[in-house]
Amino acid sequence: MSIIYFKLDNNKTDTLMQNDTQPLNNTLVSKSLSAADYVPTLDAMLARTLERIDLKKRQGLHTPDELWIVDHNDVYTLGQAGKEEHILQRTDTPIIKTDRGGQVTWHGHGQLVIYWLFDLDSLKWSVRNLVSHAEQAIEDVINDCLRSSPSSSDNISAHARRDAPGVYLYADTGATDDSTSTDDNSLDNKIMLGKMASLGFKIKHGFSYHGIAINLNCDLSSFNAINPCGYAGMQMLRLSDFVAMQTDSEQTEPEAQTEQQMSDSFSYETVTQKLIDNIAKRHAGLIELRAIAPK
Image 1 (cartoon, rainbow, N blue to C red):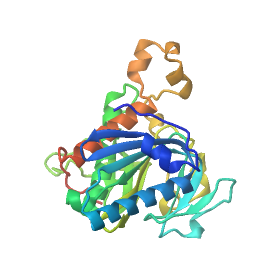
Image 2 (image 1 turned 30 degrees about the vertical axis):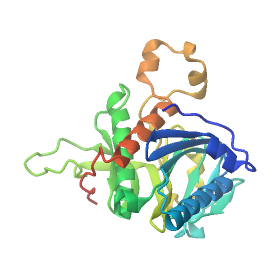
Image 3 (image 1 turned 90 degrees about the horizontal axis):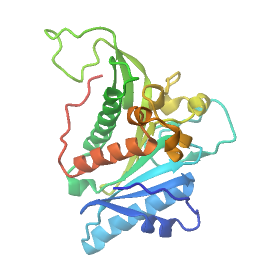
């Protein structure tokens, strides 16, 4: 599937969303938005979810699930559990109260946001299944990038935590003793470096919306104005600090790079495609859940 980005016209959200549907399989499609303001995107996402609920209840119609790949304009969002005390500084960036779970976070350019508009009942997924699939899809893609990059350290890996939703980077402190540890997901002998991906969902009549946010090559300074996800002092990380990622100019002017540089680096689109492919396989039942990560 090719990823197509377009400028969101806040007055024409419905038309644009309909025109940019990309089928992944018979039961899943993707839609992409760039430079998207948060409120009209949220309104469109909620409207689509309510429409799907109504079609299923009134007509028994099962509509394809949807992945919305979004590049948001700068915004802070405050989830249903959000507390104003976690906003440390007031800036020019808007603060929007929203209906997803969780606390406060930031969205902006260079961060990959994917909204999961899924019929959980049809998938036979619980909410816990949804969260675990989201976390493990992110783990898979980040770890694949880390393993594939010559510039990445071998002792760094991505993991979810049972006690704090999201995906975090850990550094091994030493070789694991195979006689005492048999759990591949164990965080023993690992030091947490910080958080690279956040998630928050809303479930309405068995349908999910909202989703995940992964810091690829964004400016992390915007997180300094908040306690990310309600955790004071949480260090936020981005993938571009651990693997080589192409800049915007390098993506638009590939002739400026050598063949070796191109092969050793990742683009925003490449990482996005890896994640979409992983999610689509999980949606089709081709990737099973691993054991839930320990604390």
